[in-house]
Image (cartoon, rainbow, N blue to C red; front, side, top):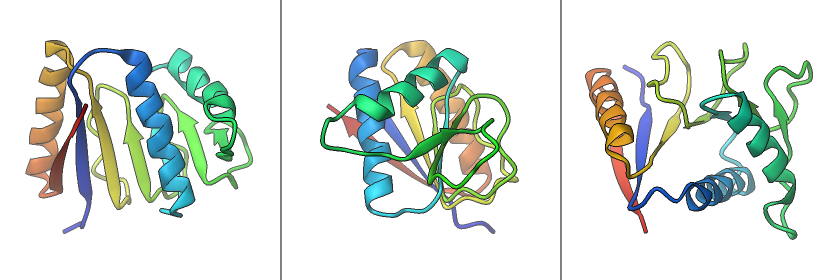
Length: 144
């Protein structure tokens, strides 16, 4: 049995800017605490590009080294993509997509971002059931 922890981060409203700022801080925290290789699974190309751009500028005093998953050089501790996973190991996955992560992945932790809309909550419930069926450890975190 894999020892994988999944944390669902539940938002009280659908303020996308607030949600993405939270994601940027989560990425920064993972990098600074050296949680290992981090993969951000964006929901589409537009979001992947936004994350790539924002990680350079979201805080003046912070530097978060990262690359896009299609880049041939994978030495950055943080990788951003939106389609299939790069052929490499990740310690942490931040999932912004609508799908549960592949159980074949060798990861330690998955972060699921859950906006307040009923549609997104419904998708999160499906992911929850999927992960529960895989015997992953599941936690919930309410974001104010």
